[in-house]
Length: 166
Image (cartoon, rainbow, N blue to C red; front, side):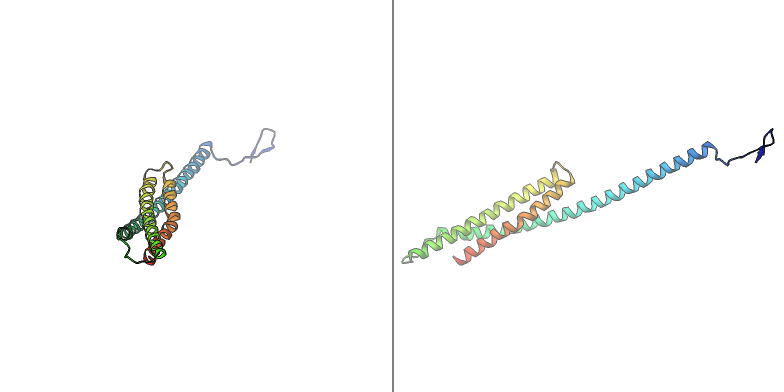
């Protein structure tokens, strides 16, 4: 403490010079900016990894659709060959109708599978690649391909069963 002219003590407060406060504020801002940069980098790495995984899923679904389309084409060819062959003479009428309906059903279902698989591959990959919403379009493409797979596979199996029963 310092005494004044009147002899009363004047309290001294220990204060940092104004330049120290400015340096501390600047350091605090730099730390906040660096943390934001690290956070953005971490988020970017996660999104990039997630997109790579989605790309693998997209390729897997496309491969499944390609394989299913190839097999459906084979069974559709078999069904078409059976449709063009005449039914043996003396076959019961209802047996002939049942045979023709089952073979036609097999042909129709397998052709639907071929078209559906082709559309899913073309439009699914197209949406993932050129979609209007960036990474969200990739997620949408994969989810749509996943959701269609069960229905298309059911058609595929029904076509095979129809052909085999015929």
